[in-house]
Amino acid sequence: MSTPALPAVEKVGAFIIRRNREELYELLLFHHADMPEVPLQIPGGSIDSGPETAVEAVHREVREESGLADLEVIRKVGVSDWFWPEGEFWVKRHLFLLEAPRETPDTWIHSVGGCGSDARLRFAYHWLRPPIEFRLTGDLGIFLNPGHLPELYSDAS
Image 1 (tube, rainbow, N blue to C red):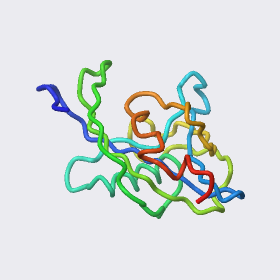
Image 2 (image 1 turned 135 degrees about the vertical axis):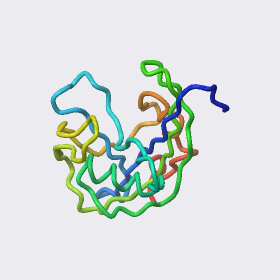
Image 3 (image 1 turned 90 degrees about the horizontal axis):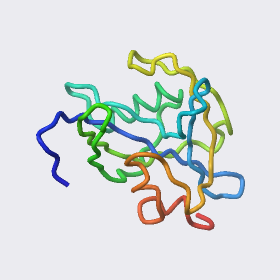
Image 4 (image 1 turned 120 degrees about the horizontal axis):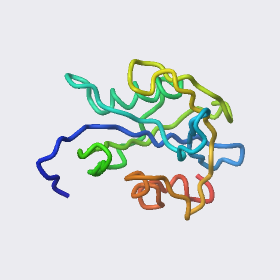
């Protein structure tokens, strides 16, 4: 998809999975602990201008937004070009699949680090084995399917 001559912002998103007790993969999701009206999300954010790569950005964003560090990047899932109507700019989002250790807590609340607009917000995390009809808002839904993330939709891995 080609983007018109509007400002563009480079972002990353992290589909983070872990194996549960039944050896099935689950997806890490969060909601704003203090703003229940905000829909479920995955960790992600902007790539810093300068020498930061998309992989470096996804690791930084995951650490700042969830407290998880040194997760293994399994693969790049894809790139989406998405128009952000409220800001009237295009978002080019690089999405990655990462795996967390089995012993990662089932739930936790994390205060966002860094100096971005979400600094000090509280994100409440949990794992979900998404049903096929489960959707995320915005451009993320195009990747949340068996074709892009087969780990989440198989009976056992």
